[in-house]
Length: 111
Image (cartoon, rainbow, N blue to C red; front, side):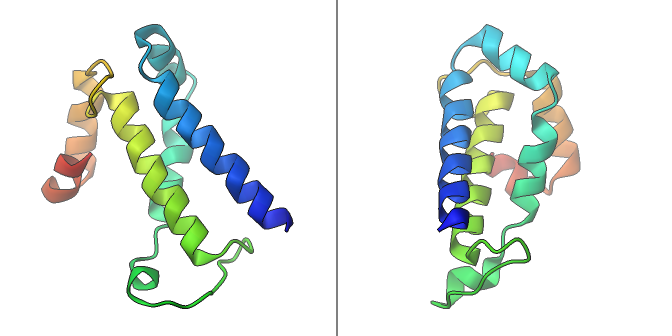
C-alpha cells in the first residue's frame, strides 16, 4: 500500500507541475530550481516491454512497472509544459533547442 500511495503522490505532483507551468513566472522558477533533471530521470525509467504485456511486475523500487510507466508518461507531459512545447505554456526556445539536441528527432517532436 505504501508504494501505491507514493506513486499517487508523485503523479499528483507531476500534474501540479503541468498546471503550474501555465504561469510564465512559475514556469521560469520551476526550470530555474532544477526540476528538469528529476523529470528526465523519470522519463528514462519507462519500460516499453510492459506496454506490450499484461504482467504485474515491480521495478527495483517496488513500484509496479505500469505505475512507473504512467509516471514516465506524465513526466514527459510535464517537460513539454515546462519547455513550452505544449499548449498553454510559454515557449522557452533555449530549452526546446536543448531537448532537440539531446533527444532523437521523433521523440523531441513528440514533446
